[in-house]
Every structure is written in structure tokens, then in C-alpha cells.
Image 1: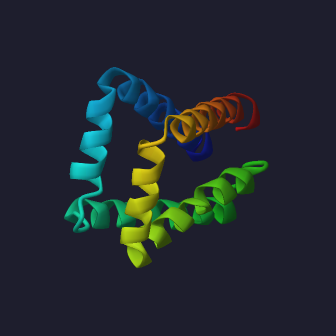
Image 2 (image 1 turned 120 degrees about the vertical axis):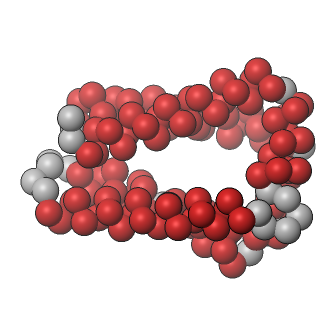
Length: 132
């Protein structure tokens, strides 16, 4: 199994898995996300995850360049979009936290986000099966 296929499946698993956990936890998820994951002061764990995210983006593009996997640039481009979230967390943490709070406190926005994540995760599974 190549790196791009693994990346698709892991990312899809995280997307679908997090939605399942959110459904099981209900309101406790919102409390956890606002009081633990995105505390008023940026937690140290966020910095570690930011570094991991940047490393994954760089490593993915290196793999695109060094391996001959057809259409690998597509998943690399999608992974690179994570840089937008990373930038928000680094340079505008309070703004990102407010965005997260707004999302978590709106049932309509959360349903839209969850639907989007599930569809995106399904697309990743199909990419992992048929593209890579």
C-alpha cells in the first residue's frame, strides 16, 4: 500500500471517527472542544499538532516529487489546504476559537459541517480505493 492510499484512509477514518464520537458524546463534545481542545489560552498540544500538520504537508509534497504515483498531486493539494487551518491557529487563534464556538453553538452549521466531513471522508475512501 502506498503512502497516498494510506493517507486517504487515515484521513477518512479520522473524519468519520470524529463524527461518530461527536454523536455519542453529544453536548459533552462541545464542552470538551471549547474547554480542552480550544481553551481560551492556546494549549501546548495545539503547537505539537501544528508541527505535525506542517511536517505531513511537506512530506506529502516530497512524496509527490520523489515517487511516480499517478495523480498524487491531488491528495497533496487537499492536504495542503490544512495549512489554512494551521495558519488560523498560529496567527489568529482567538478568531479560530470564536469560529469553532459559533459552529458548535449552531445546530444548522454543525449539521452542514458534519455532512461535509462525511462526504469528504467518503470521497477520500474512494480515492484510496480507485485512485491510488
